[in-house]
Image 1 (cartoon, rainbow, N blue to C red):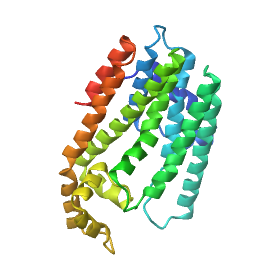
Image 2 (spheres, rainbow, N blue to C red; image 1 turned 135 degrees about the horizontal axis):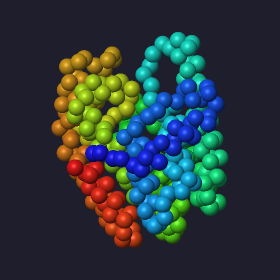
Image 3 (cartoon, helix red, strand yellow; image 1 turned 135 degrees about the vertical axis):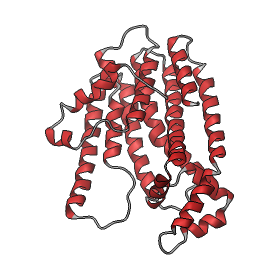
Image 4 (cartoon, rainbow, N blue to C red; image 1 turned 90 degrees about the vertical axis):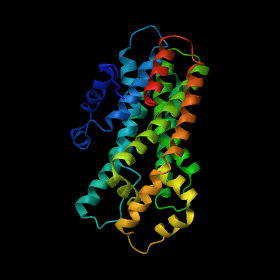
Length: 301
């Protein structure tokens, strides 16, 4: 899917980062997850069509604020592989956690500079805090053999979904939408962020077998694997109960069993897309609704 947001939106994040202290700039690498970022920027752009006016400087800046949270999440990810770290590597990890705190503080400050009403500032500040709490929850889920499909969906909605929901809420607010439409925009954004992550994960599994092994070793289990474990719990109980790292042959079997559940994943994403279309059709008819419907149709190809 080719997604190309307004150039003013894609260029603005680098401008903001260039205003950070040099030591912070050195620890931030752009682009980070460019496909995900472009999707969120498109969501922002399309909800801005609720207003006939062109994008303002405040709107362009506001579109970048969820990206500061995204950078904070990437700088301090909720995953790890047990290893003996050198002092330098430990120092880098510690520094990354401080960078995440700095980015969060800039986010909270800048929310107050782009024309947000007080209630929205409070809501978006709370949303950012909720994402950080979801990161802690995700860390606790790692290597958790009780992790189920419902846990997976709640986790993705609380992190990737909420990040896109914040983008949609911010855009609809600054476009002068009513509270009901702002709430609906947030709901649509969360669904777009959630289904995008699931599809990306499944695409990666289809074309990158090595990523499957790396993900398992990091204690994070793809949705298709969770469906596979539901179908064949005894085999996977044995797989995860190995005293040492499972053999390459066992990883291959786990991979094939996981791929067989791709239809289950597709059914779930189809259901999300169907609800998304219904929700988007509740929006006021016009350019915003049309652009969002086209985006969802492109994502579902």
